[in-house]
Figure 1 (tube, rainbow, N blue to C red):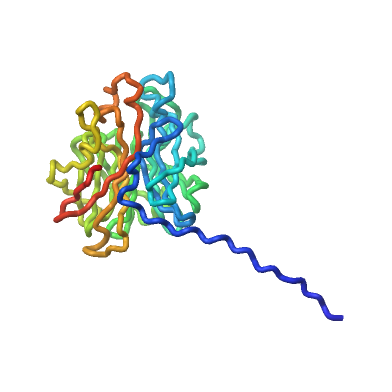
Figure 2: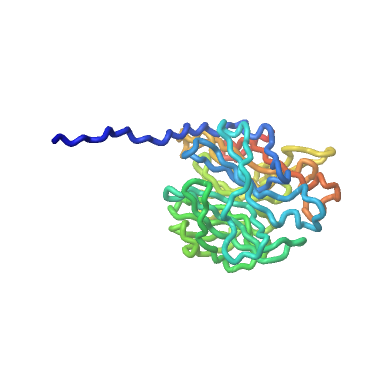
Length: 344
């Protein structure tokens, strides 16, 4: 008797992701506003090739929450998420990232300033975590790591030991020596930028502290990137972004002299006073351009307080509008060895 073989239906293949639209130089022409609390800060942009979209992660400050004392509105914060399928022209709010509270953290947790780096086929998030809500700038702050394969589900990897009770604002990049470095603000040591180094950045226990990198005037929010054949670092001095240059990002950072070494000093103004660009991320544009060692242009994505100049946050006026913030962008270019910014 002949055996009947059931008809085999072809396997259903998952639809291919749409191609990632290149990041636009005019992204954020309409500034991004958080629809919940109207206080997005500390932006970081990530290319999601799985979905063909750009992802914006940010600190979701509770700018419009009523009845908060002191700086309580910058505590108890989650990490907001927005996505763009048109190269950054428009953004869709996606809620907040889940699974980012380390075990044992006092609740409600405070989450600040994520950085997300692609390492070995996975995304690693470096995040500042504080336990509880506070009305002042006290309390321990740590930098911790998470891993994801889809930019949606995050697995806790551990805390980075940086020998300090208060470290914030992680930035991670691969350097010219082939190793990765973590730059961060150490608020217990003069609010200067320090670094740690690792050959296996996905392992929190692998980081080894190196010491101070940028000293002097207090600052925060370091960001390191390669552009025009050199490595650059920008840090937020609360009067604009200070610019430093290094040949390999392993050290020997030299401050740019052009315009006092500052960019984003007047991207906006309020009541005739300058509004400065704050804590920023940088993403290369024209990634296919290999002249002189790589892309010549990049998008710097930053936030401002459109109703406040951006000086010491403790001097904010009682007007509740001063807490509001939004995310904007501008184009960076290397011109004759100078990192220049087109502020718009």
